[in-house]
Length: 105
Image 1 (cartoon, helix red, strand yellow):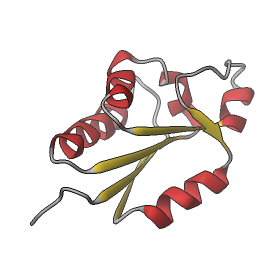
Image 2 (cartoon, rainbow, N blue to C red):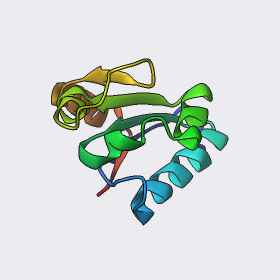
Image 3 (cartoon, rainbow, N blue to C red):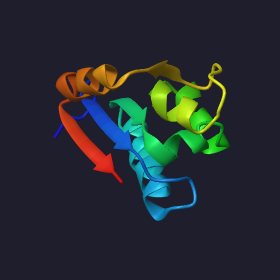
Image 4 (cartoon, rainbow, N blue to C red):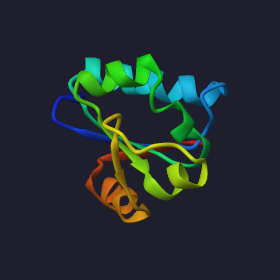
């Protein structure tokens, strides 16, 4: 099955110290390696990991990284250039635009 040109949507709400944070990044890396466009939306505790080097390397490789602005504000974090900060409306857009969508809670 040809994956190049497909879009994978990922919702990540697990904290960086949880196994599903790593699993989501592993899936994103595998998909990017296969030529898949990855749209990754960080929500809840996942926003605390936006500066994680592995996540930022994925962003540099073309992963479209979004983060919930409300979740960032609630945790007292700064909005910087680590992601595109948006509302849950963007998450809906990610879901609609994706050929496959996977959630890591």
